[in-house]
Image 1 (tube, helix red, strand yellow):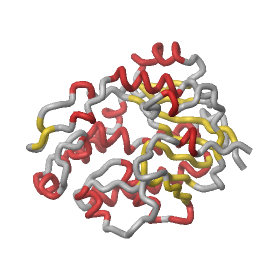
Image 2 (cartoon, one colour):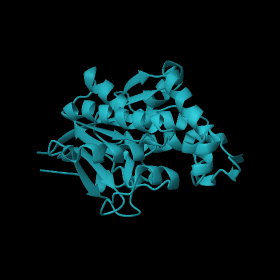
Image 3 (cartoon, one colour):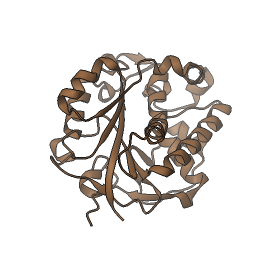
Image 4 (cartoon, helix red, strand yellow):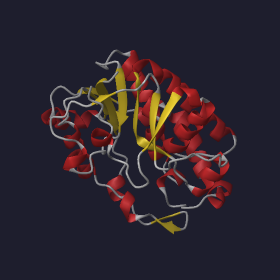
Length: 266
């Protein structure tokens, strides 16, 4: 049964607008340099939906977001990295290990050198579960949607009341039609992506399960001296308990189509 979805998202300024130069001996790709203004221009498109929105962000952005849409629920995370210093330190330690850097491809990708980038991505299921536990979600179905998801006006149809039928599963979206069993070690090494991290939809009561599975996957990576972003952790969670998931093939080059392609109207 489809129902309206509460959207959870987050934004912390980690300085992407100034990213450039060389990291680990390779030039940083220009496409990952993204000024804050781009994020807010995209988020404003997201606010045109009729769905409830919960946003975790820095207090300096509260007024700006409220001017876009007054009923967005805002949660301050000004001290996010300090509050989770043990995690950022663990990520930074691996990213600074010459053995890890010598192993991986695309050494200038942010998951190879920015602990803040990795951590903010790893926190997605934590943010959603917090919103659910604090009764901030207004619906029985909750979605994580990236703050900068709306790449164009057509991404978020103005005035759409987005609905989704989860079938009581955690819904993930893939950019390949079939999953193979390539070792996680090799996925981290090559930077291969199977699961899209920009959008996840699940019943409210399933988000704790996803958070716990992601945390277990993260611990497993850290224990063997590896680190990656949320896409690999979602794949590990999926492999650990496939019966809890539904996976939708979203097209090899399609990443930002959930409101158009996966709108479930009864």
